[in-house]
Image (cartoon, rainbow, N blue to C red):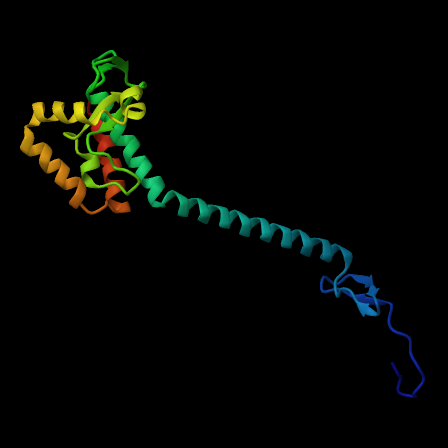
Length: 197
């Protein structure tokens, strides 16, 4: 840098920070590193870390909200509420009930809510939450023996008649899958129904 009289002048070694504090200028490869004093640099770094943490926290919250509103999670919550209601409804005052297909005495915890016409890997339909269609079964009948469909169907025919069972079969094929809002409503309905048992 040249002065007014043309004689070379050395670069200033100190500078005033925006906080008003004098500090020594730091250079790296001939380039000034910062316009801030060390205290302000540390404050800025802490603020940056805090902002990054806050952004990460917001991202996790959004991800959690998105997951909580996914079809799979909402459907599971609705099914869990309905399943507990079905098992409790068919149990006696001690919490015992009979498997619908084999008659084995089981507890509410040991029971599962079994379908006559299985959902498969598709989405839930209104028939999957029909109290006339779903019955408590033990894990052996429901899981390991494929729901014992023929025994289940015969018992339903005995209870409701062949016309109603045929209507259930038709509904399984023709009904549209439930929406997230409908599933949330089902969850709410069966949580309230469970309280009234």
